[in-house]
Structure formats: structure tokens, C-alpha cells
Length: 95
Image (tube, helix red, strand yellow):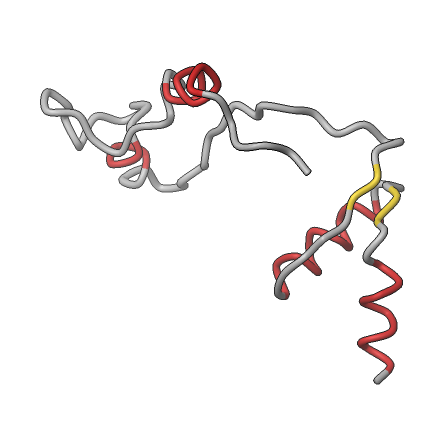
């Protein structure tokens, strides 16, 4: 189990240009802005993120949660990932 992130990791995540909702000097109507309040006004909102890790095909994944987790599970299975929770999902669906 991964331990909580360090202060340095949290600060590194916070410097992402996409990690802010609003700024005092921001123009909300400015298109192509990095702030969420600007991006929400565009015709198509595209969430932006800078992932802190990359998954490899040989990684093992166990999905926990609701229907969203099941959707992630199916997408990973489609990508030929080793999804350890797929058997549990199958068993639950047969009950």
C-alpha cells in the first residue's frame, strides 16, 4: 500500500498549470486559459492533468468501487492489462 504523499510531492502537484479553479486577476471569458473557470466556458471542456505515474502492461490492477470502477476495469482489460478484480466482478454478476 502506498504511503501518503510527501510535502514535496504535494507541492510538485500544485504547480501544475491546470490545478487552479480561479485566480484574482483571471479573465473568466479568456479562451484557451489554463484555469478551470476559463476552460468550462469553452464549447468542449477537456479536463487536463499531468499524471504522477504511468502504468505498464505488466502491472497488476485491482479495481474497487462502483460502476465507474467496473468501467475502468473493462477499459484496462481491453488494453490487455492484468486486472485482478475481474474474477470478482464476474462472480458478482452471476449471483
